[in-house]
Length: 114
Image 1 (cartoon, helix red, strand yellow):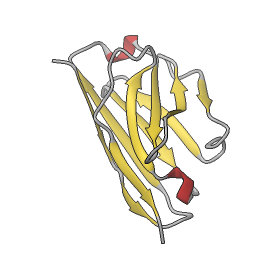
Image 2 (tube, helix red, strand yellow):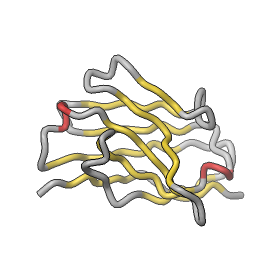
Image 3 (tube, one colour):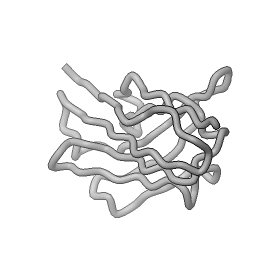
């Protein structure tokens, strides 16, 4: 059974940090380009960041560039998203997924509020 399980979300004050994790199982994680996407209440899904299979290439949405860092550990089948300088606009459910959209997790809620 394919699973992508996100964790690390929560409530944080503006300017704070969170680190999201996504543990993959049931497929060969290292074969896939991976991404994070998010969905804020009442809004469409927004792409956040992508990382290639060997971690040599990363890409970010302009809205998070310089604040978020994507990483992966293929030995642990785990994808990460380090989020710094969080803003209210970052409030959303964050999902990890294969870049081709074949697999996606259930998401973890991130709420940025004072």
